[in-house]
Length: 605
Image (cartoon, rainbow, N blue to C red):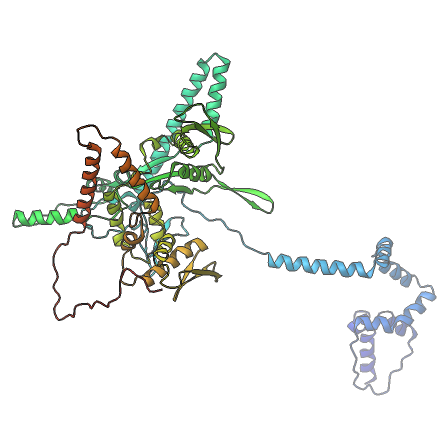
């Protein structure tokens, strides 16, 4: 038994044992002193495991004693522990103020929060490069254009969730088999033609530059060189504009079935089948007549649009000017607008400047006033007239012919009864609340829905409250709600901006005021251009007839008055033919309307 106890104690006192390693110098001191005694009978011994920090605290006195005794091992350990931290760093920590460290921690915390709030993810998106744009083609109702992750545009129908990669177009009552297909419905063909068109334009520009360089080399006179440089500098600041009609657009942007078949034969295979003929020629002629009457509805034939690319817009991001190269275009219908109005709209959108006029008086009895247009401190067109207003109009006309040469063949004041009816026939297929009404009216030169609503309230003034009240509220997902109240009628629409909401709310109010009207063409005939002559138009007609009386000759009839009378009678005849009924309808078992029925020409406010 005694031998076993001695063996255990010897193992505990060994330097390799974990307990002896924890106790450190204290264990060695006990081993040297050998003050412990072994009992006769060795009981079961339990040892407590002590933490390193507590051991250091408990053994402080022992280490001090060792250091006082001058042991070399303790002295070396003390110096090695303190040598890890430099003295300069300890002095800096002692001199540092408490407040500064507190503010530094707060600033660091705020900067960390700001970094978390402004955290965002950047990624690159591939989109298709836009080439060419057809302003005469409008997406049908309910269709929108979105960009797929592949970069190609996809056309989505909101209600049915139907998608297509080809641009849809409205067919109307036209033939689904024999109508001409617009090129925009064939993306690959339309994109290929636009690329070829851009290449031809680049080649033409290169040839023109070569010709200009050759002409400049041939010029030897310094003054002539200066004039040519001035002309070049004038021409570079102006974007190219063009005027396009519906016929030209249809010929250029549509293809026949043979051209379409030839293009498809490169990929697809066709075979010929036999079809049946009509039994009689009368049935064939009747069928052909119906096909001619049913055609795909487009904008009116007399529509002319002025289009020009807009300059890139400069946007500021974090104080840095960033150029946004968007391919937006300015579109304007010159019908019903004066030359001054067309010039101002064109210059403000295309050049981002305001034209100025310089007036002067001349020594001429017929044209005593003159006007000159100034754009970017440069003189353009000049005009003369009996008044400053007339001279200003002539100067604007001359400037438009310089900026847009095709304006020589355009007369904005050219109006006719037949053209008006042809224009309105297109809107017979458009509903009153159609969201495309505002865009179509702008392209066709017709008044906007809000102008139609103002004319309606003006004619029905005194029938009730005609004041228009409107307000707009912001919704989620970058959408707005526009509210309009007229009398007892109220309309709410969800829109992108205030301008869009104003027009769509006006359409809803007009539909509520005229519940018996379905198409927008009927409202244009009721409140649009030509529906009611203004006082100015009546005075102009009376003045024209008065001037015709001055052209009489002795003992001869006045041919001018007779031709004017013939013209008015032809207009009356055309108007009656357009309103000619196609048949008669005799209702059965229906009571005739009484004399106290409501007047449809008055709206209920």
